[in-house]
Image 1 (cartoon, rainbow, N blue to C red):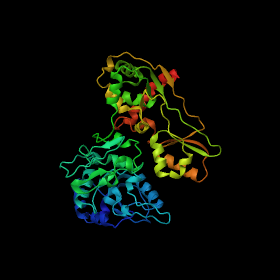
Image 2: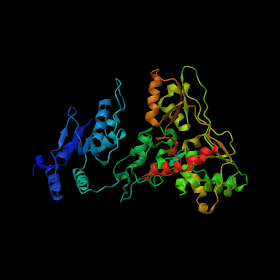
Image 3: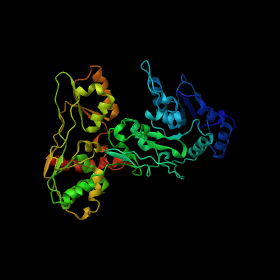
Image 4: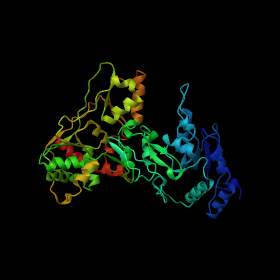
Length: 458
């Protein structure tokens, strides 16, 4: 059987690399053909694609190398769009490899970046170069129609070292970490505070030089916590302090954001239309007034210029780290003036401001012992949603923030801009429950259930 008689289209694309991984792929040609024959499959001629070749639709695309230019980014995104399955080949494509160690960039060039910074890969084959037999095994499983999640694989060995990373808001427990890479994948799209360290069985997730999270580029957005499948990255817990407050009979006022109600309904398996049971549970625990609340934005408009309004301390940190030249245009993030109250929020970064800040995950742990289903429904004592002026622009996610910042630096933006660093906004904030498959569908359904009830209260 020759290459010209087969049906499955396999394309190999090279970005900035040494061709080592592609050479490993070429070396398995006969074994690959034998595998396809055994599985009663057909292939079309594989396409070894150079930089000037046309990108065609295919079943499997293998991409080697790092992204070095805007042209590479456009080419990579086109490959992703036209591929049913994309496989990242080798350390360069997955982690940046040796080119990613380049420290100095001249003449407006881009930092060498892994392809995973710009597109999602369906599968990975690690190594420098790759192991040809691991690639052969992966293609064989794809031909059989098998699907598996590489990012959540469990190691069957004991790692030689454990890395714990401390922080004032977040901490990484190296003993729990399974090095699945989910936290790294999401962090790369925001600030790249986390990455792989060491090699082989010593591979660990860490910050650069193992510094504390507060000393790295971490902005405490908490996205890593909602993607970690084993709870290895967690917020510094506030539940004990809240229990002490309630134990003294203080009856604190509770301010709770709408997105936090959604998260609690999800975490506690409560129908969105019955969120009043959760409010009653807070009262049974000893809380006082409960206010549905959105924080007030501190807008100090500068006529003729742009005011950047961080919705939390995470956005403020992002500007300080990435765009310190814009600090003069940045307002302060919102806070809760009533420091004796409890603020339940989907935003983990709000903990930076101090006070009794409780994430949705923490609130769910506080309410876990309560038999919520048996409770009657209560209602809010007050609603203070405020809202944002329609003329204020919302920049959601890092890409949205960077677009408005670029326009601002080019003198093309005017007015006030509210910044939300979390992808898709506060509904998926870093203080929400762990992100499982279909989470977005589930939260969308809960929002629909509670929307009418909340609008009736305003």
